Image 1 (tube, rainbow, N blue to C red):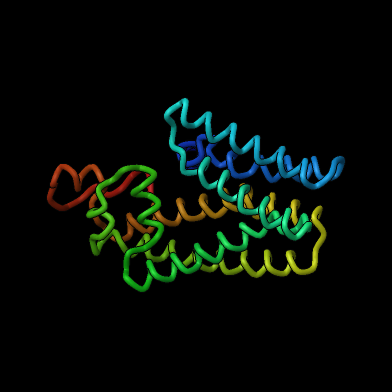
Image 2 (cartoon, rainbow, N blue to C red):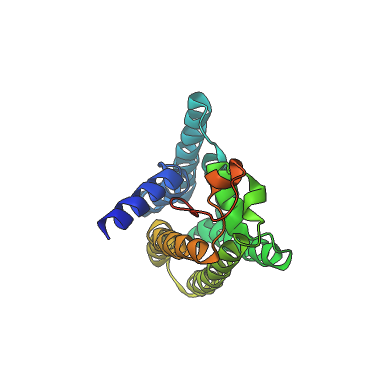
Length: 223
């Protein structure tokens, strides 16, 4: 059990490596600022912070996916909030983002190109042909179905809160539905995914790349 917990922690650190903070921190700053100053200044503050994070990624030549997503999201939300003078609209990109993920997940399942496989391929750089094997793909299909259920439930909660809740409640929900719940989903996905790959009896990614023949040892680390 200790070995599994350590492995899961290492995998989470590998996936995040602090990048998700680029998406989470600007909305939190906006929440704090708008409680003490006027709305335009709060928007400018959160935009400047997002821009600083974006520039920092460029200077470090780091992966800028999260930084770009955070900056574009803040920019869009800031425009919506300023035009409508409604602070709740700052969290509208979360609803749009979750809706987009639902559509992308449904399409990936329809075409049997599971989104979980694409995420793993992009994050780890593994050969995508391995994910398409009949003794590997089912694990990623099933995890993608799990993600779809999560996305649908998240969207339902976000829309309900957006319509009925205050800014304070939206921020709290945004925090809970963000990193903490995402970590739980990733942990469950990883534990189930590794178990399912072993049940399927396919090769591990290293065995696939080395063109080894069965019997396979199977995937022992990473999903």
